[in-house]
Image (cartoon, rainbow, N blue to C red; front, side, top):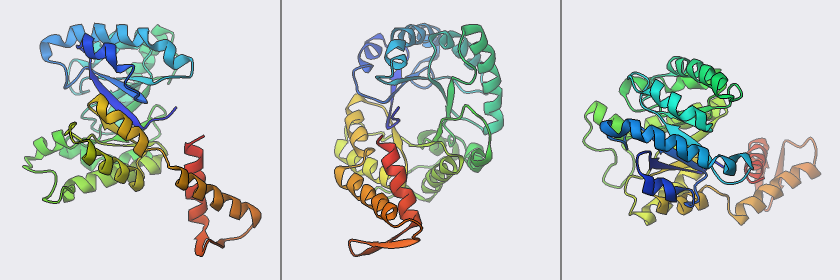
Length: 294
């Protein structure tokens, strides 16, 4: 399934949970962490499990969207109760906030295995997407994911808000709106580690959900940089992200022309196509693009 738009919805809001299925997101993330106040955590778990069960058919039929849950951090005392409550609803995956590295995720994987057995879920069916940048220490371990063998790992994503608070940064972007050096470095490490590991690279959210014009530019640039999807915090952001992370007709036609040119000249290392040189990296990129739209 596509993994372009990852839309958060508060786990304790019946109103928003009732509407999110029609938002058009490829992935819906029921949030039990930042969006839920401490006193509402228990109620949110119950609502999340009910919502997961109600929408399970849309996923198992091969249509619709994936259903994920963001649990509370693994260094706290809430995440095991989160898992026990939501796994019976067979979520497609678990988002891990403030992830501290692959070793910590193995602890989560072991817990998931036990609950999957009790809940009649196939082993390793529940995937993991860690937020890998929310502390300074976590950011320094991003490269470790590139060589890790955790079979549940679906992708990597990152966030700027928690990291800026952790290091006391008073800005994340410069006067021109570009990420400052630290956040640009973290973003690049996430992109490289995800591709090195062969998993999805998911870009962080655009916090100003009213700035849809700005989101168009940011999402288009993210796709051009090599990300395959982006986090969202409002339903209005979903169609813009979906469009940005899907190749246009011209891109698809160009990719097909490159593949066809090499198919017509087997064994060629480089060719001319419409007045420019193309070689094996162009062919690999074209094949990846065509595979993504099938």
